Image (cartoon, rainbow, N blue to C red; front, side, top):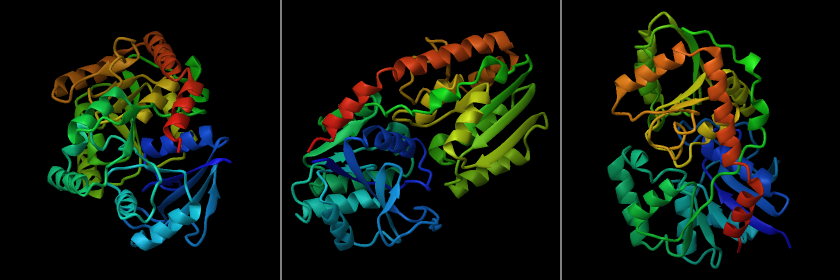
Length: 380
């Protein structure tokens, strides 16, 4: 009999939840031959309440999963009824702070869905940088769910050793399995041939790809880029999820230097985003925290070098010659590195691009092993 896994997640297509959503999609695509995935998610944006054009009355087939979009999250009874309808072998909770996660853990604690193993995936929410955003509220929430016993006998999944350390330090638990996200099956196919990424010294095309939220730190990227000379094009790709943060970005853009051409795209389909990464000279991501950094992996897979903060697990990027890591307390060095990329020749960029692709290929070279790890993690 095929195994059934029920996933509770705030974001699922058509919603854009960034790397966490992309990792979930790839996981379903990789394991759907062995597992029946059932997704419970919102039929509307969790922040702005915008309703998606989806059926909220019945289960729908989306890719390799059956999906139930909720018109509203509702109380425990409704969610419990959906879970019992599926009769899952395993519950996969794709966030610590999600309302869906809290309700599922309460149902389990009160014996309304007894005996179902739970895998909890924080997706970077317990990293230091992430916890700096609304720290008091998050501290109270974590203390509450711990004191209520909601985390007893929960399996935890970390995307990297760095995330494992962050989970263990914050919650003092050790039942953590490290499994990297499955590779996107399409990213490497978008690696541009050298002739498709022309480069002249004194000119550069940079790209930022991520949800527009404070954790991703787009304002820092804009402030650093504003001090760089040359013929520059900067593409900003991502859902403007945090409106207040986007207004800060827009204020910076209104007084941006004329020699820097900025194009804002909002959320784009995945393959179009990969095409843009494949044509860029560098991804800029001064993130406050990443448990894995899925967009970094996809950029490298397309041969796009990366300029990133030191808040990601990709610590070997400089040693491998695939890009640059600069701490956020060094804004002058950020500008210096950006200027260095502008000055690069096409030959220098071509070599850096080849090393970026090689690093991604090595990191994701054993996809079957990663899939076996997930099958073990999702065992009843």
